[in-house]
Image (cartoon, rainbow, N blue to C red):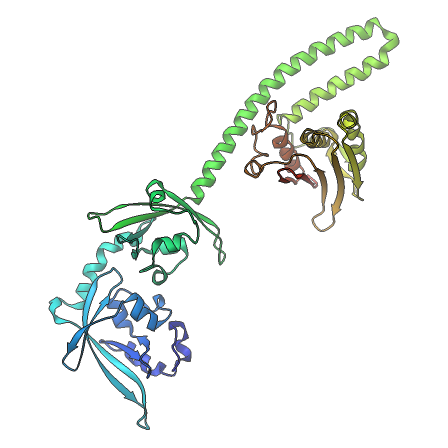
Length: 461
């Protein structure tokens, strides 16, 4: 006869017997002709602290979870011991009788189970007696796992089951570290004392979560309790605070820098105007210098992220490819000196409404980073394309320079983070800020010793 799971009851040919047993006030188990347990009635499950939902396989549940143990003979049956949900040993008597069909053939064995009378109190009262202390642990917001001296799980509360995404019956009586090492191979008892962090991957529409596990001893040395806390949101909040602090520092730094540079440029501008008055024949040169000074003043403000008006001045529909080509001329001398080849692979992209200085900031910062990453005789490939599905323009800047170490890759876009001795850590952070102004983003892919690819995504504001 087939061994049925609890969820397979609709396919069980003995279901009619199971329905009768669930309506009875006594305790019963049902076995097939091979001796395998195919059903335990609800009344018996309840006295042991379980429900039908806790059972996936009745035979496994009876022998592995309830830890069925024969104590000895009793009248025309046996005295047995079963372990209740909260690791309480309970003694029962059991008497098996065969069930026959209308033709007189045996179809199953029915076990009548009776709680031993030495408990001297009503079974329902006994259940409440050992269940009440654990009710407190089942309503706490933290997970609680109790293990013995060998780290075998003897109890786990509902919250811990929820956090791990594992049923009680899959956790209890198992080796604690065998379960934990599925998530962290380096998990250890020493780590639990300090606080062990493990990552539970996303599953069944439940997001990835980070759990903090800590343990200590109970009143005696035999039992240990392990608390489980979901710290996913705490880590996100901590990261947000750190980012906010960095942007605050960056803003203060930017304000101070702008003030000092503006003062210097204003002085330079004044002297140029005096020279222009003294040398009217060279007025064209001075006009060019003054235009550049004014442009640099505006560029500095934008670069440091101080001026971000909703109606940005200087915006116009520009040809990305043409503007990039103009700005790449600024790198020709440095690239030639280092033996670096800059290769353009422009695609067919539409005009985009954008401030030209913003685009220049993006190209200057990223191409400059590529040049710094290449020792000599390298290559920088810059290509553009338009994604018709997302309606975004994509600019890729790839180099075969030294690349970025994996441990730094996630941080290079953070403000004030830099690996350069003379870097400020603001360039890429401001570039991302500009990209986000145009409903875009910046993504960086890199491998140490192989090179870096920077992907700039731009859309309409």
